[in-house]
Amino acid sequence: MRTIALVLLTFAAWAQKTTCSYELAMEKQGLLEVTSNAPGVLVELKYGTADNFMGKDVYGCLRHAYVQKPVMAMLQQAQAALEKKHPGFHLLIYDAARPLSIQWVLWNTLTQYPPSERQKYVADPKQHSIHNYGSALDLTVADANGKPLDMGTKYDFFGDLAYPSKEQVFLASGQLSQKAYQNRLILREAMQAAGFMRIEFEWWHFNAFSRAEAKRRFPVVQ
Image 1 (cartoon, rainbow, N blue to C red):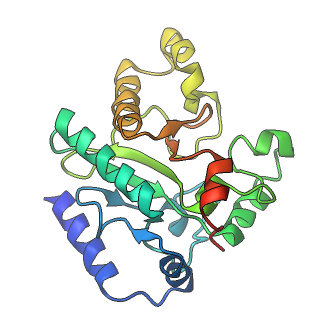
Image 2: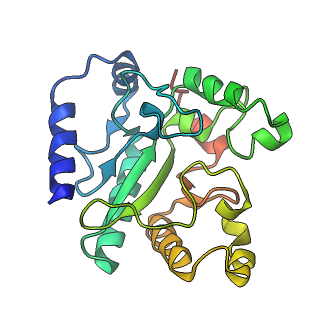
Image 3: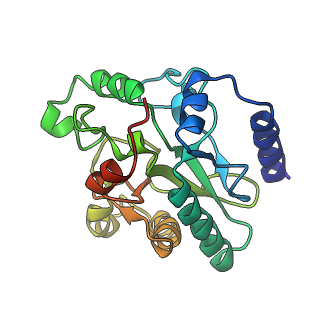
């Protein structure tokens, strides 16, 4: 099956000791690599591809998802909760720990938005993102074949249709299908069952801790 192949390929790639400076730095800080610690969770770092709002790879050698140790425990719980209600389904991570240097790249790409609007989509690097502490995840749900479920928008869609807070409005207007809404609920229920917190503007983003708590507990990922 495609899912099994994805898991094996991802694990095999990680098993070859990384030489990536970003990954080595995160390991030194005690962060854990996802696929070797959370069986069933898939990874496709979108900023390591051209399939993102910038249209280019900005992660370079960073190819594996890392999170803090307590976040890993929560992620394991979320995958277990998902599998219990929806056997064969997988969490599919699009972004995890993000170096602060790359946070600046994302921030400086969205110059079409004033800072007050821009920070809805990318945290101000001066304040740091919770991603910069290895305590946030961007992700979706994939079926047994590794295919992402329909969530009504693509990842990193900059518009109201991606807002969890406005789903009822778009359901009523028909712009968000009932199926896509139910798929969002599948993701949300699994993540919230493990203690993750959703945000207002992005269906794919979940925080393990508040920014203040993440700053208190962990050093920033450079």
